[in-house]
Amino acid sequence: MKKILIATGFFVIAVIASFIFTWARPPALNRLKVGEAVFRVEIADNPGEWAMGLSFRDSLPEDRGMLFIFPKPQIQKFWMKDTRMPLDMIWIGSGRVIGIAENAQPETGPSYIIYESPGTADQVLEINGGLAERLGIKIGDSVILE
Picture 1 (cartoon, rainbow, N blue to C red):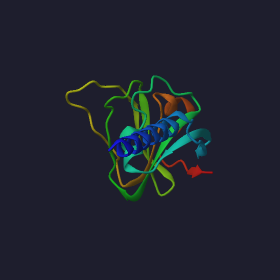
Picture 2: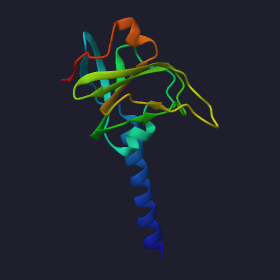
Picture 3: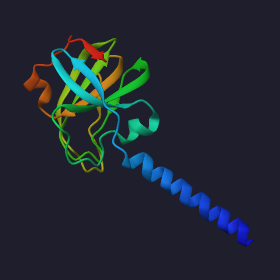
């Protein structure tokens, strides 16, 4: 019985250490060009990363963002639950900007505004609120992940 408890204890410690290491390391950044603007982006390409998004972050450097990549084009729906800073959501379909939800504001609930892509999108870029307008990002701009 004692050996089982010790083995279970080591397993639990290993799982916790793995979790801390995974969340503590800085995210890999990729270069993304939107029109003439260039960002360093974190990639969110699975359900866990889609759900977390930029939640609970207090700030985002001006040249950074998060690029959500989805397996198939469809109407994408986002909300600002647990988000602490205003964001621009740039809807992307087939390598082009198809719409922009500008300056979406943090919300505390219990109900939330749902931001919906204006057409089928396979990617969504989140950047600091107001930045798309300031940088001149517009519908039709090309989007290239390098």
